[in-house]
Amino acid sequence: MPLPFFFHVLVTDFMSRRAISLLVLCAAFILVLWLAADVVLAVFAGILVAVFLRGGGDWIAKRIGFGKPAGLAIFCTALALGTIAFLAFAGAAFADQVQELIDTIPEAIASARGYVDDHAWLDRGLEMLDPSGLAPSSDEATNAFSTTLGALGTFVVIGFVGLYGAIAPHTYIRGFVGLMAPSVRPRGNDILAESGVALRGWLKAQIISMAVVGVLTGIGLWILGLPLAPVLAVIAAVLTFIPNIGPLLAAVPAVLLGLTEGVSTALWVVGLYIAVQTVESYLITPRVQQEAVSLPPALTISAQLLFGVLFGALGLALATPFAAVLLRIGDKFYLKGFLDEEEASHEPDARDRSMPPLT
Image 1 (cartoon, rainbow, N blue to C red):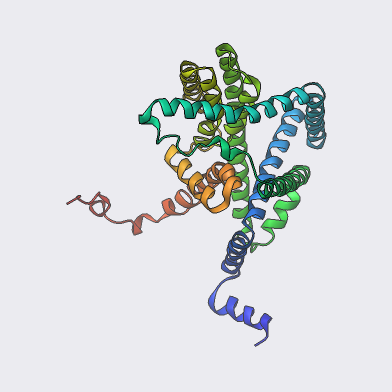
Image 2: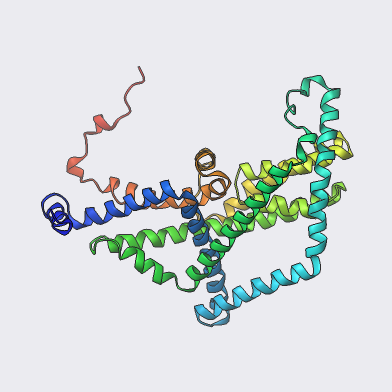
């Protein structure tokens, strides 16, 4: 049986073109996710970059009265000039601090090990920390170099996807929606629009939270007199991009450095990080997340664990925005747009809708 005739029979006798188009899209997505999950995550990260660039360009365009292309060009130029200025005036000093932090960590771990050895009840807590294991072998160094090159290549791809997506988003939206049957395309446009709203709101909340956490952490570490406060503040700001888990990871090097100054300093550092995260979680994020999907903490952590196990570090970093998109479109188009549209005549009796007894 010729293949076109097979599809004709399938469409006319068994399924509609609407169902076929959705089935093909779902099957293609699952296949690509199974065979090349890193590609899907890189494209999604590129979409995040595109949303960020487009949002910044639109913000500038509204305030100076220029068109959106001009606003995007100004925003990208400002980002490039800011990066060049940072590298020219502070890049070398920052790189030296990063290297100093890397060189200091073994000493900090050794201090932690000495403290644990003096307190037997803590021995099991840090028994896996061995400073001698930090010196990489030649094979490990080669693998690290290869991994670094792969990461740089991924960042380049993400950057290009984000730039091209920000320049002409409607081109890619039309291409994607064009794969759907005509009757589904309006709903497809609506879903993509809502996804953009979710990503813009989430990015806005995260950028503001990252800035606040970085500034507060840097000021607090400077007051405590901890060395390498600027680089530790940048680490805290960057890892805030990963809610819940990121702040815990950011606190580890700061606490280890605090132990080199004394146990009391380390405890002050722990208190500082707890205070900063409390301010960020209960004061900053609720105020700036009005346009974003409010993700329950348990759902966020579950998504992070799932994506981290399945897709590694990149999956862990992108789990929260992906969950935000799924939650928004699920709430709008599945819960409210499908389940809640059930006809009243088909609804069960009130007695049937009541909660059944537990026993």
